[in-house]
Length: 92
Image 1 (tube, rainbow, N blue to C red):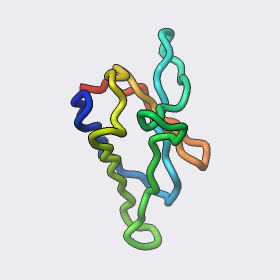
Image 2 (image 1 turned 60 degrees about the vertical axis):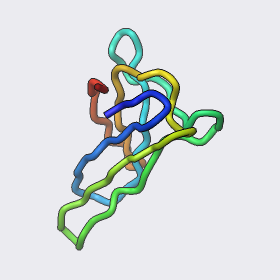
Image 3 (image 1 turned 45 degrees about the vertical axis):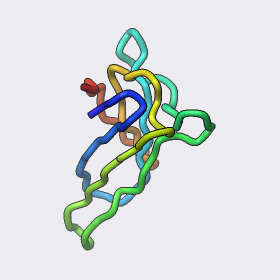
Image 4 (image 1 turned 60 degrees about the horizontal axis):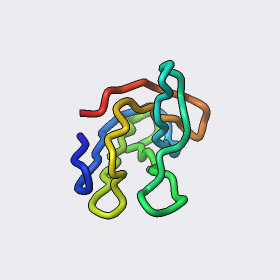
């Protein structure tokens, strides 16, 4: 969910604890650059937390207010610190 200057929220699940980072999609659909918190050089990222070994792993990216990018990125990729990439996903 994206609301300009208010909120960007993404909920996902996975199988392994890692850190995931948002990336923009290029015009040709390939993965692009890291999406930064507005006004900083800090990427929008979050740790995936696992309930227990072999258990469900989830994460919620919930960026609000002054950190939200001013424009909807349109399509995004989610990239794991372990090398996995998912996307592109349409941001509504």
